[in-house]
Image 1 (cartoon, rainbow, N blue to C red):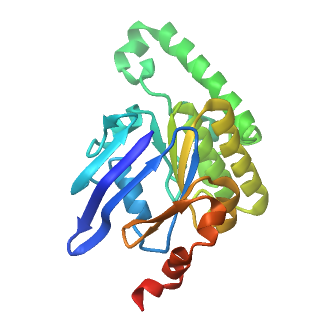
Image 2 (cartoon, rainbow, N blue to C red; image 1 turned 135 degrees about the vertical axis):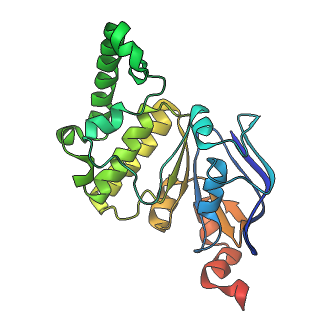
Image 3 (tube, helix red, strand yellow; image 1 turned 60 degrees about the vertical axis):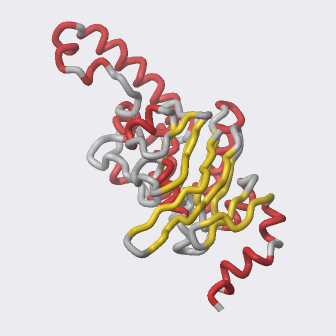
Length: 253
């Protein structure tokens, strides 16, 4: 579904991603791990258009997307979350979901004058869908709360809910488990698995919580020094000596 081929990206004299190649298969929950500074987030930024690659190609469902701006990547049905959640803090939880669907009639001011019924009917449909999504992620009781008042774990669930409103084919998650308590972590994992199984959404996620990665992801890809070091099942990665060396800093000795 997603193929990264010989991608490189430098910032001054620092090569953050170096001739990196990897694939994400449709219908998978693929984990991306590696020590700090391995290039994981830079790779996500390249895939989602926040950075342009210096060399290499990125294809999604056979179409080149490398170098496209983020809004065009979004229109390709790729949704991305960030390590630090980026909710609209002064809007309610429900409003955060309702703003997500693209091409809303109400975005054009003349439609509110000349096609008010169209705007109103579409808004009702979007609201109904948003309420269903909030039921799914178990945030329905917080629908009228300001998003900025949610806990860290609840904001991660809100990110999942917002992605559902965009009807993505692939979701890139940057450390979804960071700052999430064990109870909400179980909900988060259950939601990701359900979205993969029931809606066919493919997930590609960066995570430092090894328990989450090992219980949720297959396959697991390891990055080190800007390149792919290893790929395999959770057990294969856990027992890979090169991976252990990378995490323990053995490559610098």
